Amino acid sequence: MTEEKKEQDQYKELKKKLLSGRKNGYDKTEADTLPAMEDYCKGYLQFLNTGKTERLCAAEAVRLAEEQGYRPFVRGMEVKSGDKFYVCNRGKSVMLAYIGKRPLSQGTQIAAAHIDSPRLDLKPTPLYEDGELAWLKTHYYGGLRKYQWVTIPLELRGVVVRTDGTVVPVNLGGEPGDPKLVITDLLPHLGQEQAKKPLSTAIPAETLNILVGSRPIGPGEEAGRVKLSVMQLLHEKYGMTEDDFASAELEAVPAFEACEIGIDRSLIGSYGQDDRVCAYAALKALLDLRETPEKTAFCLLADKEEIGSEGVTGMRSAAFDTFLEDLCAAQNVPLRVCREKSFCLSADVTAAFDPDYAEVYDKRNAAYLNYGIGLCKYTGARGKSGASDADAETVAWIRRIFDENGVLWQISELGKVDAGGGGTVAAYMAQRNITTLDAGVPVLSMHAPFEVVAKLDCYETYKGMSAVYRGSF
Ligand code: MN
Ligand code: MN
Image (cartoon, rainbow, N blue to C red):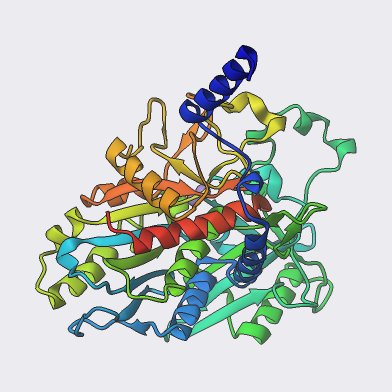
């Protein structure tokens, strides 16, 4: 061996030993694991198409859980190793527990995701007529970019609850052959003034009105004939009157199906992947556990994350503590003892690097498609405000667990410092004295009506959740 060759080899060795070997996940994945990834993603696509609202997601989660032997938990039940319980909180969030071999005094392993997504909710008095057309007024839910919601097909999902308590499910546009709804926009020919406005103000929230009809009924001299015609159709279909809108939760969501994206089919495009991509991973990983876990494994599918985790079905609600305390009580364990020994992976999406908007990312600390589940030590904005900021010990633990289980992972920040920011349920889990770390799937066009993720990252996130459930922090 020449001196030169020896030096080259030593250099290569040193590089391998000391520098991070970040690589595209496809360069680290064995070809024979790809069918499992494809299989997993098929189930995920179905979940997306079934669960377009938090209620529909919760119902689907319960259905899938019951198939795997999960039973509704009732206070006072015996709680022993191997038991599988769930609680559905008011039809909008689901908590599932697979009771572990060790007592609850040794803590739990939690994955917490959310199943609500940005959308357009109907106002309490939504239906009106203008220009001899019938419309529904909306109030947007979560941080959406209003200009993205015009001129796309929409469907209306949710419930109308009558004063006698009857819950009537509403599905307008979700069945094959159904008519769809739409929000109109200005034509470019007349849009010169609008085009000068910033994106954030060009489409005012009060113009996000959904077109629902144009055909009048009754005598020509009457006003409001199109509105009445729409109300008549709603009455025929759902038995509702105009006043019933007051006690309805009707959500306008995109009316297109989830699908594969890319000529190579390596990506998935759909509405609501924030955060159903992590919710499905957390749920599926729990339901796929074939052996009783060491510690109790918990899957939390929360509502209201997009508006700050408030509300009785959000992660700040005591509903979770109540369920956990009930389980603990059955084993004579004080809640605080269980909480301080617990670990939570706050499973929420992160921003994937988009080369078209490279200026908002620190490319050395961005998450990339196909690099695996993205860990976020902290989120927040303006100097980490609002972040739960996991400690180094926690990050070290998850690195070890992921490496031991062959989970491909990356670590990132949401974007450049001071470019913006965001939060997750992590802060509310940490508030409970539960060690918490953020991790999830990188997403392109987050919060858009059609978001994009990579199949590989979906599958690695599923593997990551499974490792967390089987591990013990
Ligand atoms: Mn989210
Ligand atoms: Mn979000």
